[in-house]
Length: 170
Image (cartoon, rainbow, N blue to C red; front, side, top):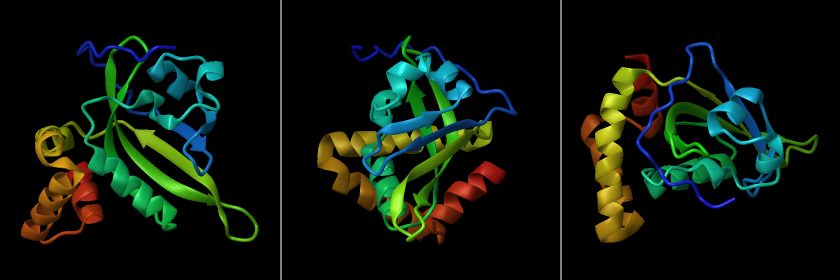
């Protein structure tokens, strides 16, 4: 499958939708529910075994995924706003919670993600922030966007987690 071309058509999750997926430790999809397949507009056969980045929208700043991987590889859960790309080029926003999955010996064996519809007021904050982060990445690399995000959080006097959860609950 060739990469879809974004077309600026938005798909909106239902209030009671839960997108669920599991990956191995490399981010390859090992499970996806029907709602994920519907939103991605891909059948299970085209999702299983593929990198979860198959639904990554090019508007997403790389720093968000760096944070995500840093958190989960450290054994921590993370919440994040993610703009995903459907196979037809449309996009959809999610509020994602990603947590590590463990075996009986407490070794991380993969990751589990549940996504819900994001608060529209949160997206009013996230969209311009992500545009700024993408712009900084284009001109100064991921270190520039990371520095900007760190400074923003320091100015607000909150951690990343506090910031993300607070705007979802606003």
